[in-house]
Image 1 (cartoon, helix red, strand yellow):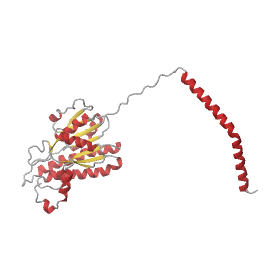
Image 2 (tube, one colour):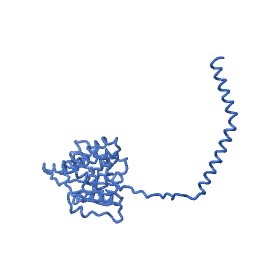
Image 3 (cartoon, rainbow, N blue to C red):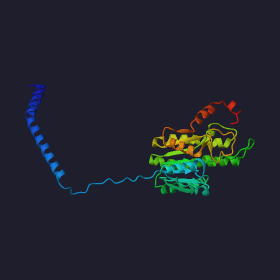
Image 4 (cartoon, one colour):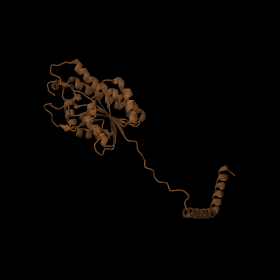
Length: 306
């Protein structure tokens, strides 16, 4: 008998045996199911010896945020809005008297703590950052760098001290604070970094050379940070406001599409919570203005007073 014929006969005999035993298997399974149903009924009818478990309320850790440059304008509006949204917020600014005026809105779910700090003191930032994160509960969800200065510059003025002070505050402070946040967020593998730039950084404007430079530098730095932190799922947002009614713009001539700091803060936070945005003009119609301005050839742009 060949091997193939032998295997076929064995397979046939096994199948016949299985079919002969199948009724007994079915009977055994039916008896087992009836016995299980009886046991379950007995358990359900017997008095319980344990107390029913009650669901325990979950106490979620409050979301935490830091706003640098929070004494007035967009920064102060962001602090109030974040507190209203349930964040515990640390408001940081140089002017301690202005910080003391910050209060959470009525019914706010979050709290506001303050720290007086000069962003040009970059050596103090690492220790201060760690202290704030501990006070906010040991983690951080959002940091916003809103500090900035734009001193008046005359058309024939070339003041190195004034220009370098803008670099220190607008760009140096941004890098120092955002580097600390980036290091933490990379470890957490979550978090959002927001830098308040300006549409002024889209081109080299002759009316404010140093200010435009600082905002262009901020945009490039934040783009590089965005690329570096992409793998860690950290959201980095560059905000480019147009004209916002703040101390910086008050008294300027020729302003249009002027919005309040509160309106700007609401738009910024919506963009911060939406990972779609990497750069957000505020209001959005300034995107069209920026697109046109960037497209103007240099030989024409230098003739414009913008």
